Amino acid sequence: MADEKSLNFLEEIVENDLKEGKYKTIATRFPPEPNGYLHLGHAKSICLNFGLALKYGGKTNLRFDDTNPVTEETEYVENIKNDVQWLGFQWAEELYASDYFPQLYEFAVRLIKKGLAYVDDSTSDEIAEQKGTPTQPGRNNIYRNRPIEENLRLFAEMKDGKYPDGSKVLRAKIDMAHVNMLMRDPVIYRIKHAHHHRTGDTWCIYPMYDFAHGQSDSIEQITHSICTLEFVPHRELYNWCIENLEIYPSQQYEFARLNMTYTMMSKRKLLQLVNEKLVNGWDDPRMPTLSGVRRRGFTPESLREFCEKIGVAKRDNLIDLSLLEFCAREHLNKISDRRMVVFDPLKVVITNYPEGQEEMMPTENNTEAENAGVRHMPFGRELWIEREDYMENPPKKYFRLAPGQMVRLKSGFIIRCDEAIKNAAGEVTELHCTYFPESRSGHDTSGLHVKGVIHWVSVKHAVPAEIRLYDKLFVTEDMNAIEDDFKNHLNPDSLKVLSKVYAEPELANAKLGDHFQFLRMGYFVLDPDSTPGKLIFNRTVTLRESK
Picture 1: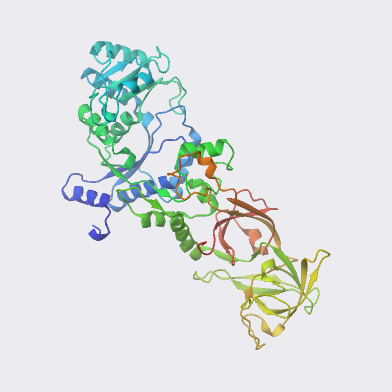
Picture 2 (picture 1 turned 60 degrees about the vertical axis):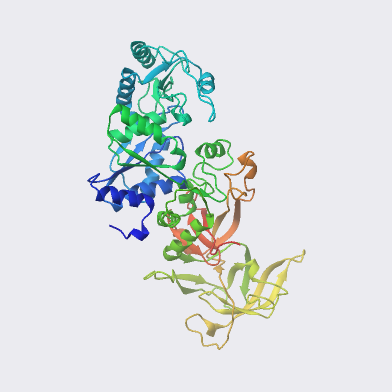
């Protein structure tokens, strides 16, 4: 058992249950509805459910809550499976709530036979009005006292497709004056003549979430059913169904969902962004989906570390996006090969370097990693440097290139700026510089001392690239607190594309999934849009937290 000081409240519950012999082994589940792509909030739930089972020698099922055929698709199922495995977890069994449709139907029949469920012909508006308010009790309607035999016949006819959508529902018969509004005879089955992604047209009635969820947990003998805080009011109904059906007593526990600054975690609203083409699909690197953050270059290790750091709370709070970026930097710094890429190129001509001569400069791949090795960068008479690395009238403590000023080329020579060539508009188009042959990195006998070091790329060998710089998708810190249309808060500068970029030739060998630190520029990953003739890199995070 772990040190009690480090236990979260769910681990304390599990340890206590095992200690008391309540269970020989624990079972958890991750139960997504396949109506969209998973997002960062789901990552927290995945890490929690799978993490508990791994820690205490139990198992976790992946169960798709596919009880709403209108919104669910096989595409979402496959993507969810990929995301869970990408995060580093493997489920014990792949299950579907639709697997249990026959059993759930029999459970409903059992409630009817016990006088605990009835068929209601009221409209949805009438049902809502009859339920009352939090301060006023609801009222019984004329259908509540239908005889058991009539309810059994009507429910069977609903299943057989005799009635149109919305004409009848099956409701649990509990208490229309209950203090918990959800216990005021909740709807447990509705009619939906819709094609289901797995069961096809076999069914035209479907269980509601509150009826399907607890019973599915019970069928699978889930010991600890972990939900987010919005399901606290649902726990009473969860327990009522299990108790009155006299089935395996799964237990529901709630934790705080993940709310992050500048982030929207509603699948419905994320789908709206996709459908209205305000983003480039579910895997747009600005999206908080796991597909999006993966494409942007976040690693599963950094997401698991992030979920570990935020912990498991009983109260909702707002987690700063910068914590996720911090976790990404910590991991990427260890695994990313260093590369030189010039984003805003300015040509340097080394006038005293022999024309046609080339040499290779050994350059470390990653100073933070063991045995990362070196690569050899071609060096010649003409180089690209960053335009910001030259200033005509520099302030004090400016240690890069300026008229008469010297700088070291990373892994190369010291050069001095002799002349700036300008066009008719007065813009600097080229720098003429002198290099000092004795100043080569690792073999410097020149006696020269410079404070500035800049990166560069050989003009002759440079590989053209496109760089996509991503920023937060929304400009408002707490997107849960807004009262107007969430689309009013989109960041117009969430994507900046740089097309005239030059990369060192080694990057032509980059593969999908390779992570790089572009010196002084941040951490980057190759985008799937890349082709052999056109490299595209996404910035994952900057080198340091932006102010």
